[in-house]
Amino acid sequence: MTSLEACVRESKARISAAASGERFASAFTPTAAFVILVACAIPILTLEARAQLQSTVGTQSVLQSLIKWFPLILFGPPREFGGFALNIAVSFLAMALGTAVGIVLGLGQISIHRPLRNLAWALTQFFRNAPWLVLLFFVMLLTPFQIRLFGFSIPLPGWLKASVGLSLPIMANMSEIVRGAVNSIPTAQWESAESLAFTRLQTLWRIILPQCVRRMIPPWMNWYAILTMATPLISIVGVNDAMTLTQDALSAEQRTDLLMPMYSLLLALFFLYCYPIARWTLWLERKYAVKI
Amino acid sequence: MQANAAWTPDQPIVSVRDVHKSYGKVEVLKGVSLDVRKGEVVCIIGPSGSGKSTLLRCINALVGIDKGSILVEGQEVHDPKLDKLELRKKVSMVFQQYNLFPHKTALENVMMAPILVLKRPKEEVEAQARRLIKKVRLEGKENSYPGELSGGQQQRVAIARSLAMTPDVMLFDEVTSALDPETVKEVLSTIRELADDGMTCILVTHEMGFAREVGDHIYFTEKGVIVEHGPPATFFKEARDPRTREFLSQIL
Image (cartoon, rainbow over all chains, first blue to last red; front, side, top):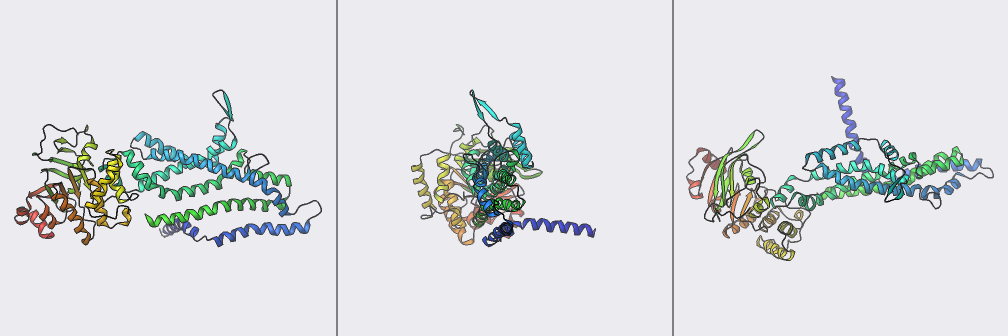
C-alpha cells in the first residue's frame, strides 16, 4: 500500500514538474539563450583549433568549410529554392493550411448538428494522435507527382506535398484550440446574445469568436514553433531542406571532424529562429492573462 | 409573432398558466400562474432555488417548458412555430451578471442588436444609443469598455442595451445581487424611472424595500410554486401563509 502511494506521489510530482516546464521557460532569459549559443560554438571552435593543427595544404579548416557551405544550407543550391529558407516556407504554408482547415474543423466540433460534430471530433482526434512522420509518408505516397486539370498537367512538387502532410497535425491541434477557446467563453455571453435575438451564427462571429482570438494566439504561435522544428522531417521524403543539404555537404566533404560543427550550425539556425517566437508567445500569454 | 387579433391591451400582456419545468429529475417549477398587465411592475421574491430565475427565462423562451402555457400579448411563447426574434423584440432581459460584450464599448454594446438584428440604419441607432446612455446617466462613458466600468455602471449599460430593442416588457433577473450596496441605488433608480415611464417590468429581486415602493404586485415563490401574492401594501403587512411570514421575518 505504502509503495503504491509512493508511486502515485512520484508520478504526481512528475506531472507537476512537467506542468512547471512553462515556468522554467519563463526563467529562460536572453542570457540563457546566449549561453546555449556559446555551447553550440564550443565544438566548432575546439575542432577548428584541432583542424588548424592538423591542417595540411589543400584541406580547409572547419570554419572555412562552414563558411563555404553556409549559403547552401541557408538558401539551397544556386537557382533553386531550398535550404533553411525552404524549411521556413514549408512552415508558413503548412501553418496557413492547417490554421484555415483547423478553424473550420474546430467550428465543426461545436456545431449543433450531431453528425457534423462527431465527424469533426473524430478527424481531430485521429490527426492529433498520429505520428507526424507517418502522416508525411502517407501524403507523399498517396498523392500523385502531378495532377491533370483542364488538360494541363500540374506538377505537385515534394515541398508542396510535404507542407500538406505537416499541415494535418496542425489542423487537428488548431481545431482543439478553437473548440477550447469557444468553450472557455462563459455561457452567459451566449445567453445574453440570444436574449437580444442574435442568431447562432451572429453570436459566434460577432460576440464569441472575437473574444476567442486573443486566447488562441499564444497556443497557435506555440504550435508554429513546434511545426518549424519538425520541418527537418521533410528531408526524409526527399526535399532539399536545410537538413538534406547539411547531409549532402557532409557526404561531399567526407570529414568526420565536420559532423559536429555542421549539425551545431543547423541547430543554431533553428534556435535563432524559434527562440524569439517562444519569447514572444510568453510575453503575449502574460499580457493577455492580466486582461481577461 | 403576428399581432394576435384576440389580444387587446386591457388583457394581461404576460399570462403564465400552470407552468411546469424540470431540469433532469429536479422539478423547478411545479405549476406556476401569474398575470402581468401593461405598465405594471411585478416583483417576484422568494428564497434561492425557488425557480424565480427559471420562470423569467421561460417567459423569454431562453429555456423551454414541460407543461402549461405562457402568453405574451396573446401569443404562445412555447409554440414551436413561434418566431423567437419577434418575441425577443417584445420581451427583453437584464441579467444578474450584466453579461455585457467585453470586446465592445458601452455605446457599441447598446448599438449592436438594433443594427444586426433589427437592421436599422446606423446613424439612427447611434443617436438612440446616445440618448439611452444619457437616460441611464452614463454620459461620457460611451467609449469605455465594460472592464473599465464599475458593476453598477455595467448594469446600467445592460439596461440601456435592452431598452435599445424597444421592448414592451422588461425582465430583470436579480440585477442588483452582484453589486456593491452603494451602486445598488443607482441601478434601482434607473429601474424606478423606467417604471414611472410606464414600462412593464417583471423583477426577480431581493430588495424588499424597492419591491414595496415600486412594485404594483408582489409574488412570493417557494420550491417551485407561488405561495402567495398581492399588492405590496397588503402583502408585506398581512401575509397569511406561514412560509411567507417566515421568509419576510428573516429578510426584513
